Picture 1: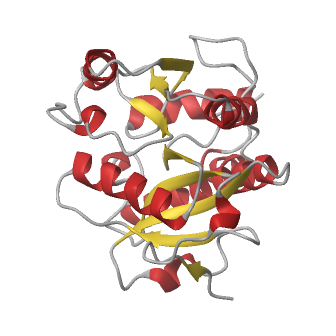
Picture 2 (picture 1 turned 30 degrees about the vertical axis):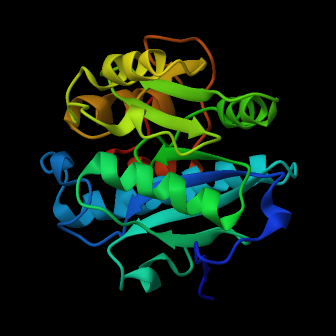
Amino acid sequence: MSCLILDPSHFDPALGSKCALAVMAKAPRPGKVKTRLCPPLTLEQSAALNICFLRDTTQNIAEVAAGGVASGLISYTPVGDEDLFDGLLPDGFALIPQRGDGFGERLLAAAKDLLACGFGAVCLIDSDSPTVPASVFEKAAAELNRPGDRIVLGGSDDGGYYLIGLKQPHPEPFANINWSTPAVYAETALAIASAGIELMELPIWYDVDDGKTLDLLCDELLESKPPYFTQAPGYPAPHSREFLQQLFGPRP
């Protein structure tokens, strides 16, 4: 079954009580996703693992959304590859196309478009962190549901972030950021502070984009070793765990 594709020109006031938990995702084509995992993986294995990440992240979000305060979505690129998400997403998930050239432009445009659809708030979530605890998404939605304006930010251990949440389409967090560097989180937090916007910080987590962080994921999912920066249990990510077990075998 094909997913509903949202149109930002159609405002739905019924969405005003919900936070959009939107995963920023590329259509899972081999050679187009997770290429920095090759090696140690092949392009086909990297794309297959990316699909597992999407399944796990969206399943996690769907469980949070079942509480009624949020909705799950995919903000996708490129336009025309919508069918590649068929059969991958939980019931109730919708799609909305990305637009813009640079990464900051696409993030801001996604926030604007989802707020234009009628959502009361939006969290933009990376597609590379399949074990983010469900409690983190719940906290982000709850903080954005409180009165007053604020931004929530979940930092990655590499200096980036895995989630940014807004109630208004503030441009400041997305302008003049040195993307794909260890300075992203610090620069974003500074931009938020300079704009006089309240910042609520979420727990640190990690994204999987190279061999080193793939090892971290294997430790977490195959050996039950929490990431070095926390003792909090992550989301069990069953699809990713099963795929990694097939690739590398079970660990003691």
